[in-house]
Image 1: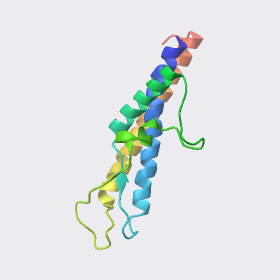
Image 2 (image 1 turned 45 degrees about the vertical axis):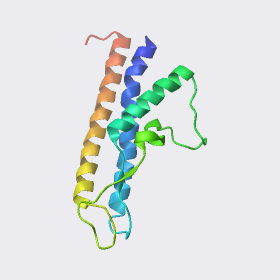
Image 3 (image 1 turned 90 degrees about the vertical axis):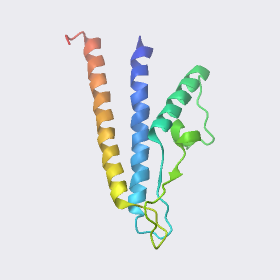
Length: 139
């Protein structure tokens, strides 16, 4: 029973961690908008989440977490495969070879922030529902 309750939260907690990582990546792009030769990066969130949930289920089956260094952050979707950072192709080349498109970065940043907040609210709602069920409160 507890496994079923925590499994429901695992997916959303992984999504939340990936959203936070993507926010960090997008903020880095925005911060480097005026840096000559800076190449904007991003990752495919959906593919990274699929990789993270697959890696989590494989880790759960194996019963251990493998990391190459003890200080590495456990974000399986970013660690390898399709979750790797990829360069963005600019719509228009800049004179200083910077590929940051501020309009796109701002839009992506705002979209990701809204989705982060929605995921966080969903997790909070699930926790409240579980606590109500544990306490035996009527729903």
